[in-house]
Image (cartoon, rainbow, N blue to C red; front, side):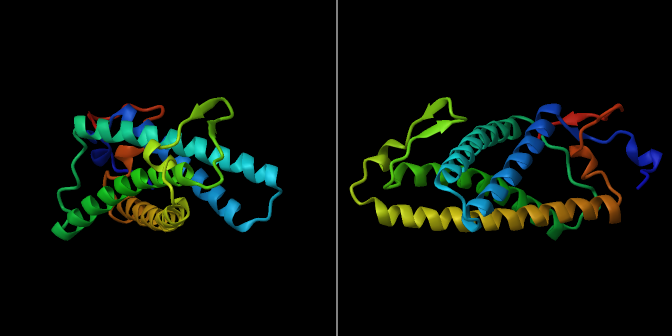
Length: 203
């Protein structure tokens, strides 16, 4: 959809760092969800399962670091404002959705790390087949691990589905703003390739 010239100028965009983090994390989450579904629903040989789990853990830990960096960046850089004509309940919904997304993006890698740390199998985590990653000390020394592991599996499983649902809502809202409301919400997070962008803020 063509953007009117008077609306494309002066868009207050997110910073380059915020945009890169946003899309890297989005790509990582999508990859992890697909891998999780494959591991849960397809019959694979043990070696393939082991490799997928190690890669899943590697991407998850990387995502945890990126999410931590993004939260720090968000707290230290002001985000562009919402459209002035947004209704009050829409603003509240937008803020709650973003808070829930940040929360679930933090919960998922932490619950996965905790689940691995308390696993009775005791398989070590080696990031990308190279870097040893430690278990969480408190959980790795528990005496009665199975019930804790079972609880963490439930948290990780349903957390993934809730995160997927929120991402769907987030994408639908961004597309609504872009194609139906024709405002700047989506454009301020799209990479500015081959064109000058407006003022930049944090994510």
